[in-house]
Length: 204
Image (cartoon, rainbow, N blue to C red; front, side, top):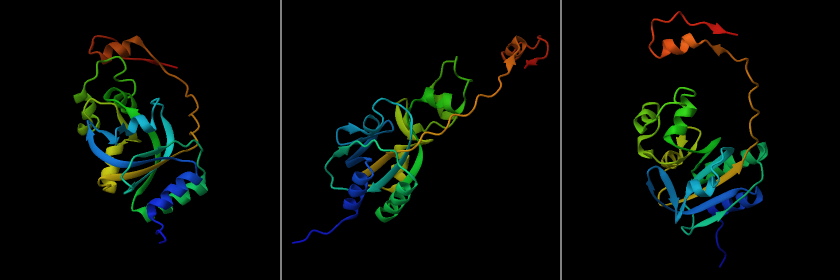
C-alpha cells in the first residue's frame, strides 16, 4: 500500500535540502515563558551558546509527535526564503525573519532603554513597564525580535505538536560609528536632581 505524501514530509524535505535546523515533537506547557519539546527546552536547542543571530523561523502545527532534532548550518538566500514562505502557507504556519536571542529582563531593558539602566539595579517590574511580557517572569526566554517564541506559537495555534524550521540569514552590516558627544559634568548633576548647577553644556 502506497503511503500518502504529507505536509510534514514536505517540510522535512525542505529542511533537508536547505540544510536547516529542524525541531519537531510534542509541545509542553511553558514554564516561565520557556517552551519545551519533549525533555528539551527550545532555547537550549536553538541558542545553546545564547549568541544572537539573524534567522528565518518557520512554525507549523503538527508533526509525528515523537521528538526529532537536527541542526543545520547553511545560510539561506532569497530563493530559499521564497520556498519557505510557500511551505508556511501550505502548512498553515508562519514564517518570520528576525533576530533570535535569549533575553532576560535586564537584557530587555538594555535593548529598549540603552544606557539608562546600565548602572542601576533592575527589577522585573521595571522591565514589565517597558514591555517585557508578564508571562515570562524573571526567566531567560527565547525571543524572535520582540516576540517570545511562546507568543509566536500562540499566533499559529500549534496545539500539542509543532514543527519548527530555522535557517541562518546573512548578518546585517553594522552601523557606522556616529560622532560622539561629550556630556559636561553639569548635565549629570542636573539629571541627578542638582538644580543649583549651571545649565548643561554639550561639548563636540
